[in-house]
Length: 390
Image (cartoon, rainbow, N blue to C red; front, side, top):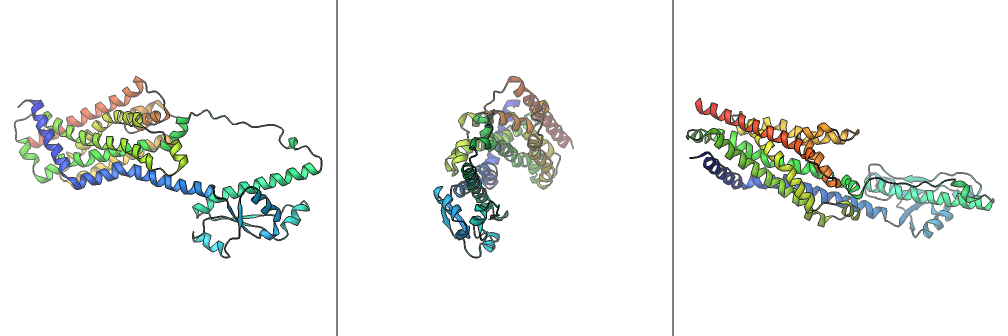
């Protein structure tokens, strides 16, 4: 048989074996494809709860009788003033109460009229996330009340209010809407990169160390077929599974947007079909390289468990490399594009920001992936040849 026919026969056999193991395939689909969208939906639910707290129009005031002026101000701001429970401190610590409490001391209004500066406590708990989020809203209300009191006092004494603000500060953000949105969607490249790795992992280990452990590799090597054809078929099947999982992962974030509960997150999450397609194209050479690399690591192992232990180095490296751009605050460096995983993460981040990718940007990671694929395939073919001659 010719090399293409042998490679095609091996490819079909490996694809059938990979798709037949439904339990492992379902685990990979859940961990690689669904994990990212599920975390995104959970994050949107958390942000939605914080947004609801921020829009809450109820202020809990302990000692409202001592601050009628403050109560009047809050009511004019369309807020409802209520008394907190007696044991609000214990409930805040136990996370059974989710609102901060204003504590007004006795004689507060009288002290304010005398020109003193009495203290108001904003009681919260940093371990209570919901109460801590509401504390910022209450502090803004107190700042507005303090400014109103200051303005009225100066106006009664004949001081021009304009003297309090001798100049106006205007903020201008140079980042585009896509760049600001990338702060939210920046987690997507990590999930799809890990999807490629986990999609190729089981298939690469099973087709090499798994077959050796089951004793089905030796009969295959007894055939008078070229080792390169066998490796090509096995590698093609592993890469196909990796690309399939990566494609599902890239496009799974599109329907996930329909389930977002946070209006802010939904407005900033700019990810559609063009971005998903660009992600898939950028991940194709990466999937091919990771498939060959994992096969090269697993072919030297005698058991599936040993191959799993050896592949943890690749898993750790691929998961940590994209974090380089997070910790490096000096900006993107040219060498990023020559490091697998980091290069794909960098290019996908540019896609999310709406930046154009030039031929040089795509060529560098493509060359690296091709080299890794060739070296990995050559090493697997060499190990198979050594096993056949033993």
